[in-house]
Length: 464
Image: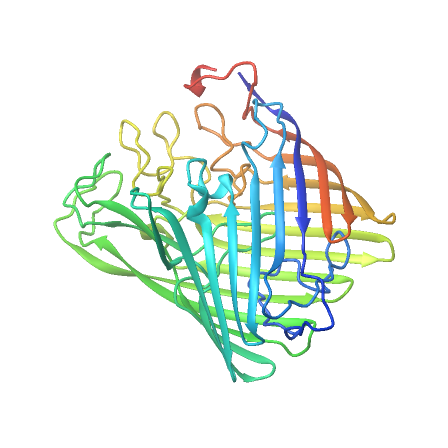
């Protein structure tokens, strides 16, 4: 049985931004750090957040400190029984500054909604190295895999789809040129955060025929588009950026190739996908305004989930009152590959349906469509509390990384999505020292019956 309404007292979030206590003998690293406008949703020092200005202590030298800790828990949903800890997100980072110009950072990121329920937690353990030399900055983002190759070995290597590996040059105080070898940084949005817009999926092994199950060394590989970015900051409050790049991938040579209708090719060639992004970030103690745009030019042959995305975000404090607005629009890819949980091949279904299709083999309705999502959030500060009301609406074709995306939240036979989803939320921020605690209760209402009943759970959803 499918429902169109969902009570979801689901969310408990704990956020902390903590640095070691300063002493008279401890020298601090410079308070001014590199600006990162491609990630404007991160709660930067002195910027306006919904919970109030977040003041971070300067990082100590030659001493480990916790940069931040975030724990987010879905406690309960009326649509299915979810045990405590089953949908928990845990993200924390620790840093160490050797000198004011050199540091390391360790990060543990556990996110079942993004990485999958079966991922080993250590597979998302990151090591980040940073060094500054005169007008140049270097950063490497490395992955530590505690079960490399399934053999129990530990490996250390570059995170090949991370935007946090880069080389930057500052010819002027207001100008920064950044080369990102792996990922230009095309995730956008805050509440409606997308995955990488410019993500390429391609078949490695150049098979003569593509079938439901891979043969020998056949696999799907994924990459993000790397490139060059220019950031201009005419003032401490305002930053503008733009960037572009390209990536190559294998694709069959025959003009009549179709992954669905004619998945055969005797030879392969190299194709190109180009990506572009741009944005504006304006931050003061009371205002946080962000606009972001990202697109790429070959989503069809690259099997990409998204073609283009645009987002506008504003948080504004006026006295004790705080309000947030967000509008994010996406255009879905026309030929997105439907991959299995680990992303190494197509989802194993019979008959072979490599593109998102419903139970009857018809392509899902969101492919190639444009749609948007909107948010209005209002709060009032009482001492250490900021209670708030929030309203969200997701268009029926809107695609993003959340569980309510049009490609995830669908009817039992997947012939339709939610048809338009409205969410009403009551919550509060509680500030205790450097910790922010955020409990909230949500009520969701969809046009179509997409929520499974907790009293009728079956392996075959079509029968429920």
